[in-house]
Amino acid sequence: MPTFRIPTPLRPYAGGNSHVAVSGETVGQALTDLTRQYPDLRQHLFDGRELRSFVNIYLNQEDIRYTNGVETAVGENDTLMIIPSIAGGSPLL
Image (cartoon, rainbow, N blue to C red; front, side, top):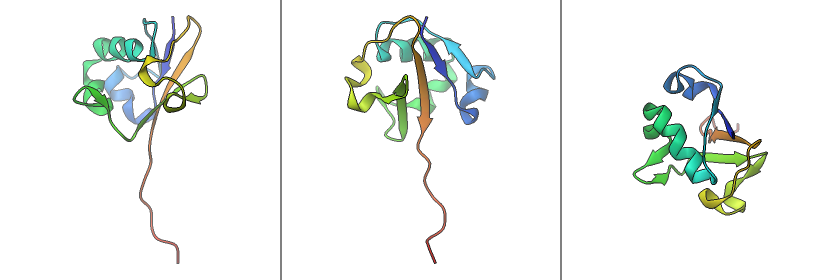
């Protein structure tokens, strides 16, 4: 089964888990299974039916935006990572 690595800020919404095994043949199906298992994650990952713009999904170290997006095929031993964008800070002096 493919596995999602859950970043620390989202772990409270995934039962405290750092890794979650999911089913599915595509990234989209794997995300559907993840949010089926942990419905509280959905609001943090999706805006309606679309992934939020600041949520980046990587499949085995590769950003899915540069492959086939949520239609990217996943294999039995693949690792998916949720990488939330980080913004902010202070201006350079």
